[in-house]
Amino acid sequence: MKPIVQISLDLTNIDEALETAALAMRAGVDWLEAGTPLILAEGLHGVRKLREAFPDTPIVADLKTMDGGYLEAEMMARAGATHVVVMARAHEETIKCVVQAGKDHGIKVMGDNLGCPDMVQGARFLEDLGCDFIVHHIGYDERRGIAAQGKRMPSPLDQLKEIVDAVSIPVQAVGGLSLEQAISTPGFGAPLVVLGAPLTIDADAFKTADGDLEASLRKICAAVHAHGDVAIKQK
View (tube, one colour):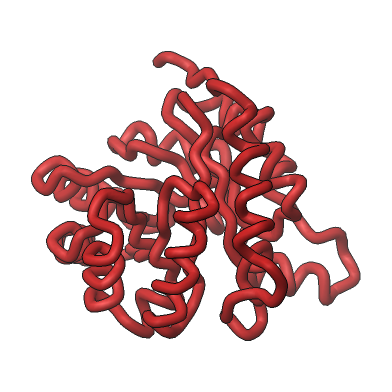
C-alpha cells in the first residue's frame, strides 16, 4: 500500500478549516479529516462544506462513536464522509452497527483503540468485528496528565510494531508524535500518516499553527510519499 498523508482539521471554525484544507491539498496531502473539534463545532454542516470544496478527496469524520453507531455513520456518509471512526471501548454491537452502516453506505470504518487496557488486543478486536483500518491512539488528556505527574509521556510508537504485526489491515499512529516520528511510521509498517495537533495545528488553541504551513506540508508529503509501498500482512 502506498503511504497516505492525512491532515486532521482539529479546528473549530469551518472557514479556517477550508483554508487549511486548501493549502494542504496544494501541498500534496491525500486525505482530509474533519477532526473531533470541527465535528463538535460544525457537525454535518462542516463535513458537507468540505465535500463541496473537495469533491474527489477522501474525508475522515472523526466521530469517536461510542453509541448509536449506525445512525452516526449513516449521517456522516450522507454528508459526504468516506471514512468514520468508532472506538474499541464501545460495545461490540455498536462497532458492528458502524461496520454495517459502512457496508450499506459505501464508506470505510476506522477502529480507534484509545483507552484500551490492552492496545494490541483492542486492535485485534476491531479487525475481527470488521473494521477496515486501525487507529492506534494515545489520547491528548492521557499524554498531558501523565507528563504532569513527571512521568515519561507515552507514545504510539511504543507498541506500533506490535499493533502492525497483530492485524492484517492498515494502521495509523496518532497522539503526540513529532513531525519526524510521524514521517517515520511507514517504516513501522503503518502507511497512514496523520498530521494534526500539535504538528500542524496549535494544540492548545486549536487553530492553524503559525509559520509557512504549506511549505512544511509539501516537504512532509514528499518525504512520506518517497517511502514507497508498505506491505500489509495478509490474514
